[in-house]
Length: 77
Image 1 (tube, rainbow, N blue to C red):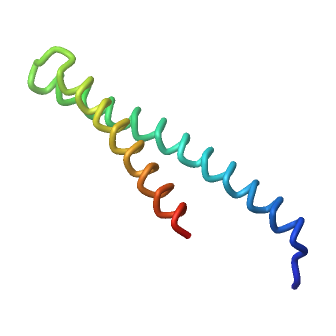
Image 2 (cartoon, helix red, strand yellow; image 1 turned 180 degrees about the vertical axis):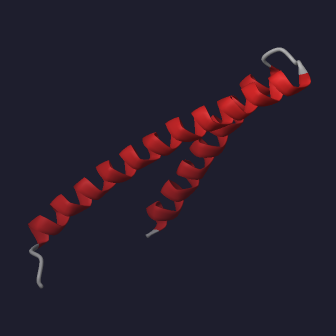
């Protein structure tokens, strides 16, 4: 099946929008997951919001770092 150049450009634009929405979903899910694990650890060790905030920020930092790494690799192609 042959794809015309105009259609390929349109598909490329859609794939980048889809990729951004997938990264947004991953960011939200991982943030909530790490937040919940931190909440559980805080209840277990009776520490204020230490683990909850720390793991939440770790999840955000890791997701943004991984997104940046993938974007940097795609830029070279």
